[in-house]
Image (cartoon, rainbow, N blue to C red):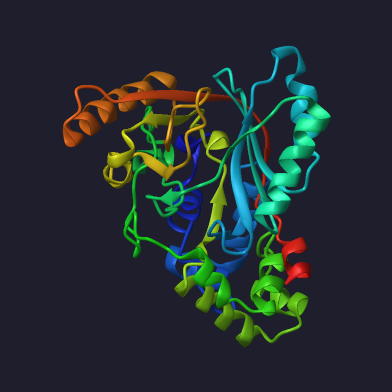
Length: 353
């Protein structure tokens, strides 16, 4: 089932509740009241959407570098070894995303661990066992706070949907606002790590999921709700809600667009790019010369390749004009295969706290 084939109820569950999930004892009943149905229907539809692969989980997305350390990495893998090397990478529990993309560096993965040192150890082990040296590209600045993946409104009720990409939605945090991850980390307590661990697989699809979550953490439901609200207020949890899988919803053209921006202008470029419709992520990462000249990363999703390429061309022209540059070099790296996609695992982080 693609997003243009979703019922109105399914569309609203997937599109409207990717964030601001109710912090009440019976959140699915709250959703039902707002959607004009009953709690059992909401639970049944979410379970079906998860079974169909449209929903990864109902849960939290955490800010990078607060509960631990993470990096985006890539290896240049001979095509005949892709399955072997992808399997080696996927075997590390610290790896939570792994995609094949169109580039000489063709395997791209995210490593999240307790510390910068452990991330470096994982990369070293991948190098040692796979014989391929990874690019290590940790985030240096976040210009786009995670807004979730907003489906195009025409996707509901069998209304077509065309080739449009994700639509930007408002959020209380402006793109590019600086966040001191180390200062946030100092405000965390052991119970916060325990809660993050319990949230790894998401909230249960049961009438009182917070009570079940609280029991796993050895706290009351009220204390659990208060702690979640605090983590959201601190922006340690970037969003709480339905986490969707874009590919299963018909957004098959997924491009990581990398940009070579003059270093003195990269912050301005990042803020401008983050404000553009259809840009779902925007980060600054280091260059790794001579192999990797790009320092700004963004994500675009669409139903087809041509639509995404047209959007990239428009963004390139807009960004060049805004920065007063005759040309801005960029390259879209479309994904070919998804080897692994899951939430970051914080169990080891909790034990280390």
